[in-house]
Amino acid sequence: MFPLDLSEQIAAVRRTFGEIRSVIDVDRLEHEIAELSERAGAPDLWDDPESAQKVTSALSHRQSELARVTSLGKRIDDLEVLVELANEAEDEDVAREAQAELASIQRVVGDLEVQTLLDGQYDQRPAVVTIRAGAGGVDAADFAEMLLRMYLRWAEQHKYPVQVLDTSYAEEAGIKSATFEVDAPYAFGTLSVEAGTHRLVRMSPFNSAGKRQTSFAAVEVIPLMEETDHIDVPDSDIRVDVFRSSGPGGQSVNTTDSAVRITHLPTGIVVSMQNEKSQIQNRAAAMRVLQSRLLLLQREQEAAAKKELAGTITASWGDQMRSYVLAPYQMVKDLRTEYEVNNPAAVFDGDIDGFIAAGIRWRKQRKKD
Image 1: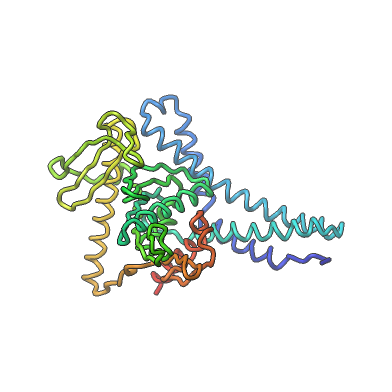
Image 2: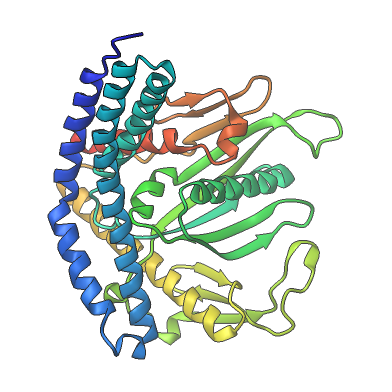
């Protein structure tokens, strides 16, 4: 094993890390942190709680991003020292520790490298994700709940703040739909490649004959818009319904009509919120998501019109972007990128970084082509 020579691997990591620092623009990041820190220290900051929350959240996000980059640079420096110690003492335990640390650093560098590919207009925004059960009856509702757990576990593993905004439970098992917000930098850019139709193939636990069942669920991902992106929604264009929140089995969660459902009449977009305790809070949250969806729809329509005028209409991803197969064999495969793994249990437990990274790189390549 000795001498332990990781010089080529460390040099490659340093090159990639230097490119990452350049793209992230550490100087700009430090300048933004200084400005936000000054605003956060203002004595009248909390006179406007909503504005204060945005300032402190933005500051926290940028500090976290800077700390991640700074920490990675220090880890690379420390790794070189660790290799020297291993060689000087000819210590196999230290050598194994150095090799494990190199592998860990390579994974972090890979994650950061993928983030540098997120340069879309809204990629830096938090994300609002909606999962809906599709064809497949009870199995589809159960599959939708499995996907919800998968994304919540993924966010938990990355320590991303998540808030479940609305859940509509199915009668027998699973959910009809669920909407949640991931409040983290680049959450939209990262999760947007998860949008599309997901398919599950398995021996149905709800089928007494034990037959193989195929079911579907749809995943929608939109960026959470800021107030500066406000789109006007006249009261005449919406219908507001109020109802009591409920949980699994119809058990009452609230004893007042605090849940809110807003229907945008011109487009048919429906947004429901029941997470907050008051009707006013739920209505405000629902309007925020509705405006996000309307603004995104407006952007998409504008982009589609431009493409049509230019004569370059791009085909959509299709009806099925990923298959989760539990029988007769074990496999999860993304049909766009061809990325696949043979451990569906780990995927459903939140291990989807490989799929996300492959999706981001695939999307970037399509834009180049």
